[in-house]
Length: 214
Image (tube, rainbow, N blue to C red):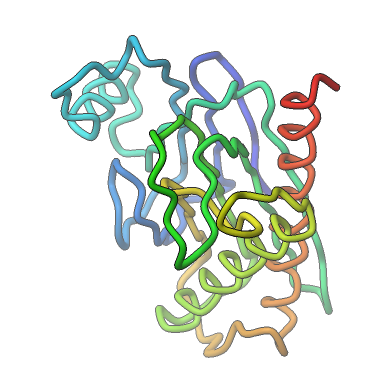
C-alpha cells in the first residue's frame, strides 16, 4: 500500500495511485492530489535563524523533482522510520511514521523551557473511498491513535504524560468515494487507528530506548 524509498536525508513514500491527501504539511498542505509524500531530514545547520523553512523545503523538493509531492520536515534520522498496517472487515489501512520526542508536550500544558528538536510525522493511507467529511474524521482518528500510543509509551514530562509534540504533522490519504463515516465504530476507523497506534508506539519505544542508552 505504501512503497518506501530511503535516500537519506530523504524518505519517500509512493502511493499505488494518486490519492486525495489532507494535511497541514509545510509543503502542499490542505486538500491536494498526489502520489508521493516526502520526509526531509534536517539538522540545525540546515535551518539557520531567519530562514523561511517552508520556502526552503519547497526549493529542496523542486530541485529533487518532488515539487508535486506533499512534504514534511523532521530532525529524526529517517532510517528510524516505522510502518504498520491493519485490515478490518476487508478495509485496509497503513501508516508510515517517524517519531522524535525531544519536543514533546502534554496537551493544554505548554512547557516554557527552551525548545528541542523532535516531531512525529505520519502518513496514513486508508484503502477505501471516503467523502471529504469522512476523510476529516479519519484524520481525527489518526490523531487520537497517535495520542493513545504516546500515553502507552509513558513519556513523563513536568506537565504530565506526553500526548504529542509541538510540531507534529499528519497526512491522511484515501480515494474520493461514498463512505460517509470513519469513526471509532467503523471498520475504516478501526483499521486506521490500529495501524497508527502500532507504528507510533514502535517509534516512540525506539526513541525512548535510544535516549536511555538502549
